[in-house]
Image (cartoon, rainbow over all chains, first blue to last red; front, side):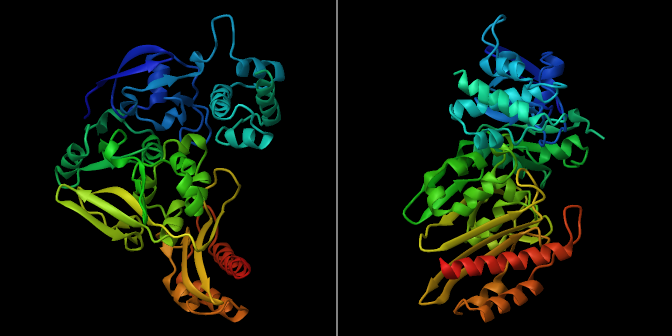
Length: 157
Length: 287
């Protein structure tokens, strides 16, 4: 049996010490220990992207990261994306304006993946957007509205 | 059913020598853990019998891509994203870059490692055919020391490889050459994020109308990623005419051993493999 370990990370800009079994999924620790339930579980096997978060600015599936691997890392979840309590990030705003969210399960992951794309490429083409979101599945199949949302976010820069 | 997570150990030694020490304990009771993109899927599915892991993720000694005059050396923890972003790899090893692009989505590419792809030893992995065709060599390291072996001698049987207890893949070495024609095709159910039905990598150099150098490697058509040495020999020193291509195809049809499984059928895989061989040779002859 493993012992719980302390893991020091920065989560949405705040220094946190997590206390967890080393092989616990980052996804579960975020949701259950920190109540950051915006990050969703879809497939649990790295296919659907619902659990997407940024680790040191890189897009990852938090269902595939054992929490021991985030010691010393900076993690950003959907809860840390808005500019302030009163102002959403332009990508979030665009999803609302374009109807980019239906049931909502894929939305946090889509927003995180879109953000990650825009950080690398501020003027993505339609093809770049499709490729950037290829690891995120929408069970409502509302892809066109999602792509439109990202296009709108690009235009609003 | 989900695994009982507290029963899994994941220790994080800060240096390579401490990791090798940990891996040498209790005769193979400890296994390496890199990006987690395969092992965490098994964990969640309750299909991970091995309980004790050594976390390699933070070991600088296993990271980085070094370029010398004649070799590119990729640390085993090189991610698919790092492969795609590297200028020398883009120019000289385009099949490896393409394999990295076609493996999983971006989140997987940021976390999945080349070393993990090799040692996980799936016959359907996408980077091994490219590495075989490029004559990759592996650098293995353990407490006892280092050794190098040709990658084409690494996989022995399904999920079995020339990796001793306590031994770690440190790096992948690729010999540099520019005068060759490369051909890489992954065939899956859909273009994005599919596991291969067939993956084909070919490298050829034609001198005075004859095949002077040829490498052909495939994924998903045998219990291991396979280099088709008999097919290569049948084409070596031949002009690329229709007779030679026919001979190559008939040699390959007895050299690969595709099976029926959840992703495809034996017949489909065989036909696609032969079509890809012919397409490779036809394009090479007009390149």
